[in-house]
Length: 175
Image (cartoon, rainbow, N blue to C red; front, side):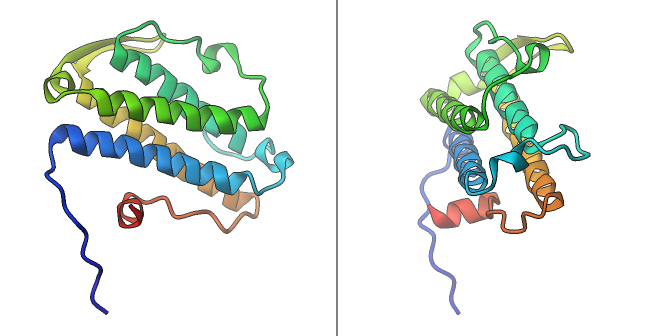
């Protein structure tokens, strides 16, 4: 079988990283769509992991994307769920993570090549630093990918064996 030809467009640093943000949104949407088909009680069931449940892991992804978007925009960070807790419903988490991933993708698509190279400052209760916008973007998107993998593993531990494929290569083949 001959593989389908993939149309290639001009690739720039800005277009590649912006596409990675669109992939991040797509992957988060895939997980949310999958988890919406499962019993809500499973979302809060405790399992041994970095975060104790599917819900808490999704909240962490959402919270961290919120933080890094504020850093990238150089605006004050929103109140951290990690510090102040999140008492919302599973449905609010599903909506929040997807809506915020869309906001992040929209913002990153608006940046120009020079804006990607600009240094930005971040301050958190855990660390401070200065790096280029692209370096912090890479960290943010990589962080979300890491924890999406944990969501799948937690799901497996809860008996969910039908997780969606969210690899980047699958995303660009589906585009």
